[in-house]
Amino acid sequence: CEHVLIYNHSVGSKIAYVTRSIKIFTSPSSISRGHILHTGLGKFEVRNARIENFGRTTIDVIDSTKIQPTNLKFGPMMKQMEVTYQGTNQIARYAMHAHHSKIEAYFTGNAVLYSPRDGMVAHNSRVHITDNIIVGADGTGIFLEDSTETGPIVNNYIIGTGGGSRSGDDSRFG
Image 1 (spheres, helix red, strand yellow):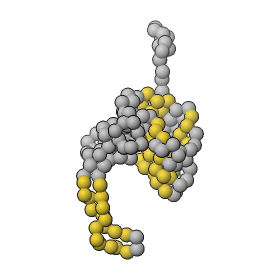
Image 2: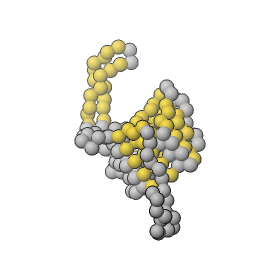
Image 3: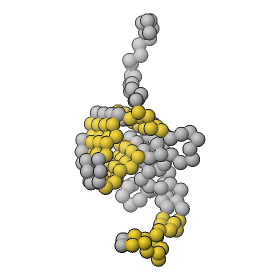
């Protein structure tokens, strides 16, 4: 732009650069939103990506699907499971989620846009959550689920509606 700004745009303004060369998003025509989950072993790093319209769990009260084993056996420690109740708001389907990860995980330099509940969640995991931008998470931008989580959480910028309180979800909250 070759023109000088006419108005003072810095008064009370915040700015975040959300463009990334890697974009992971849920298609507007999809009937089910994507989510990123890690549990167990194996390297887990999500760096410098734009994650848009991810997450299935909403700020509504959790209503998870229930399953139970059948009598069919397929081998040692393997059983067929059947759905006994079809829930409407499954827990733990957040935009980005480290769930009982047994290795260090990294969420670094990402832009997470428009999650229906939480942008980034660590649950009993060691996660480095650094230099991220989270915009429009209807619940919380960054949520540490059990207070057993470790790892630095620094230099993150969160802009969102923040409507979720988690009260009434289960016995741990509210």
